Length: 193
Image (cartoon, rainbow, N blue to C red; front, top):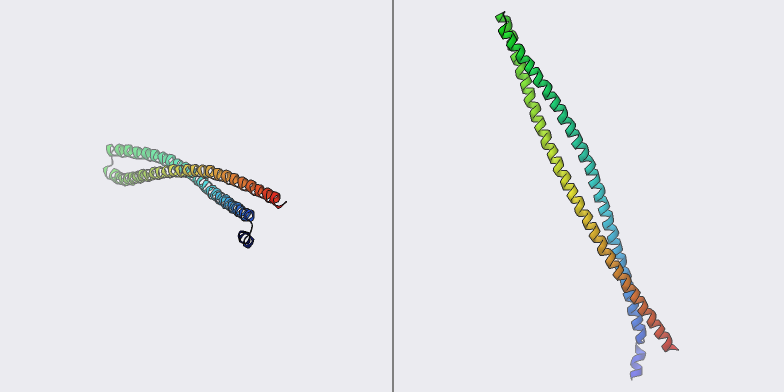
């Protein structure tokens, strides 16, 4: 009866052999899946790095443009202040001279011109303030992008180390499974003889 039970199923070494082959195939599939996940993460991180570098370049260009605009506006403010000073000096000189009605007309025109220049100056000051605020926002964006880039870099290194450990573990499991399979084949061959 014991011999009959053995005849109905495959010999024990074939079952063990099938289990080892199944384990090896499972390990190979798992290794392939981890390799694909690692590759996908590397691609994603590469894209993020490229985007971060592109944002960095755009930010640097914007900062440079902002600095140039600030310098230009400061130059305009300086010139406008000089013109206003000259106009005030001219008005003062005109008021101290003779020809009251002619001077009053020139004085009114100059005062209007002076107000216009002062309004332009106020507008330029507001524009400079807006540019400063925009520059500060760009610097914040730069710091945020830099932090994000650093986070992605740290995550990539973590994933890389973890994947390398898992790959080494899978290789070791595969090596052990192959050794066990080979040992069972050797045992099977020695029993078969």
